Length: 464
Image (tube, rainbow, N blue to C red; front, top):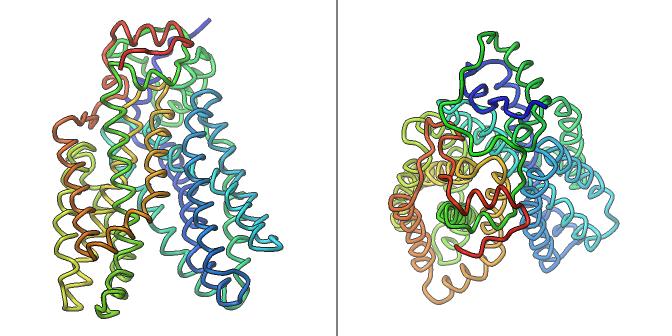
């Protein structure tokens, strides 16, 4: 029985070609429609409120249901993909939020729509975990950062296109049309993505070596690689099939990575949500010119496209660890400056750079997380970190409003700026650089705890 096919080394040696670009587009379009379905809530809720189909209170329940679904989806996606395969989990979550988007268009009342949105959010929450993880497992080390940035470009485009489509579709076709557009597009992609191959890295690690080898041969043939594969430069800990209990994430060799991933995900998600979702509102509520809000919104559109393009350029030069740290310091500085600007040109320019920095920190923070964990529990590690980040978003509004009520906008921006400084210091002190390295080369060192995790999948690690 063929188990050891050297999947990692064979994938890493491939030149970038049509296969990688196809994976990028199929994965990227999934995150595009996830972004579309996530972003449409702003225009849809406003339209429903205007037509008295909903109320402010029901709109808040709609948003809470979305965040709760996203949190559960992020957690479930890690278990599904590590247990049943990347392809199964990827298609399963896409089918959920595509089908539920169409069902949303038929909702007879806002109460029904809230319940449907919760289920839809479960599928949406899985997409970011799966998307970044798939790119990490297929793209060679020297181009992983670039592809993570390009993935961010496609995702950011979803935010812009949603606003444009909503501007045209809602006045002429009604708010239900937005769910139809998102649902049809998502299910169309589900059909196209059925031929996306399973990850050979995962297949090899669970003992399905023949399948892994067959997929690798197809990919190699498409890339024109016919030379025999060389032995892996980094020894694999164990060639036998192995499944790992989630408790390995808190074992001694791994817990540092787990904690760094959790803190990074919480902060970059919280910072992005606060800066793009709350700061313009706070400016206006404190009597500042509405120009602040309009200028920031214009800057946000540009920054969410320019930031990922910059990320694609610098990610393989700075790496994920230092890329996030530099972006976080940049954001911390601009957060402090932004509220005190009065010139419209300065507001737009500063907002543009701030949102661009936020986008870079978000992409490299979330996208670099799967690189920290071995194949056996890569998606559970990334899923746990994103779940913590989503939980932070659920409680975030209460914290933000409390800070604003007691300390004004200075308290809010001070907290956000301070959090960015925290993540920069954390990564500088305890971060693990994965740049330009094989995923197998950056796995936790073999130790007694690690070996026990692989040999006994039911044994919980009592030492952290």
